[in-house]
Amino acid sequence: MPTSDAVHVAFASSAEFLPYCSVAMRSCLDHAPANTVVHLLHDGALTDHPRVEEVRAMVTAAGAELQVHGIDRDGLGRLPVNEQYRPVVFLYYLLPELLPDVERALYLDSDLLVEESVAPLFDTDLGDSPLGAIANVVRPEDRPRLASLGIPDHRRYLNSGVLLLDLDKWRRGDITSKLFEVATRRADEIDFADQDTLNLTLGDSWVAMHPRWNAQYTLWTDPDIAADIYGAEQVTEALASPAIVHFEGPGVSKPWHALNTHPRRSEWWATMARTPWAGTRPEDHGLVTSALRYLPERTRLRVYWQFAQWRKRRSRVR
Ligand SMILES: [Mn+2]
Image: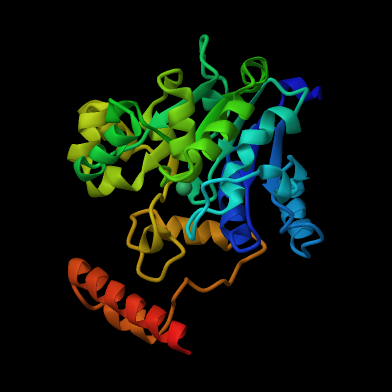
């Protein structure tokens, strides 16, 4: 089939995240249209990685095609990276040049679970905008930070976990260069790597899509705050039938963590069982987290946090 009619879905992964990325991929393929091309972006860590061929076999068996794109990390310049954000999070910025003949691409994070076909999302009318995205649920305590960055309306701060890129418009507007320029110049102010940079660079020029396409964890934990962003009706719809569940946030927010309690957690593990990483154990699975499961949720997370701090200090001493 001609590549121009294909649905292009891009993921970016480190070696460490490859199992989680493959769950996101697997869930996408479970509902994929026949003409799906999956793109796996990496910063060199997956070159000759023994398990990439297992991922390819999974994608091919689902009737889709896998294209792997290795990017030389020296070419990325000085980026606002830290312990949580590695250069790999910026790789989707390069999609317009990696896929020069492709008109649009969907970028998906590795910490999500796709629940239905992404074809309608891929076909979203973007009008004159270069990007479709879903607003981030910004908690009140996080809003002053956005204001200090120069983002006046927290409802117009996008979450970068699910993005629809009009690659032609990105190429025409040289958006990739602008993003790297902002990321470099404002590196000291930027906390949320690619996401802050995208918001600072694109400002208001993105189309807000329905939150069911990027149903963030905060919909479940803070539905009232989410209603302030999307309206109560969209929150109800997203919670009732999320099309893509996004486990954003650190540590225990991830479904692969031993202390995660998201309602879709077991579905995520059932999907993991159908990847090359079937049989993997939860992160931090052990005596401590097993014991902590008996505590009420609030206490459990506080005690776990103290335990993690203690463990970190101990490992520094050694
Ligand atoms: Mn994410």
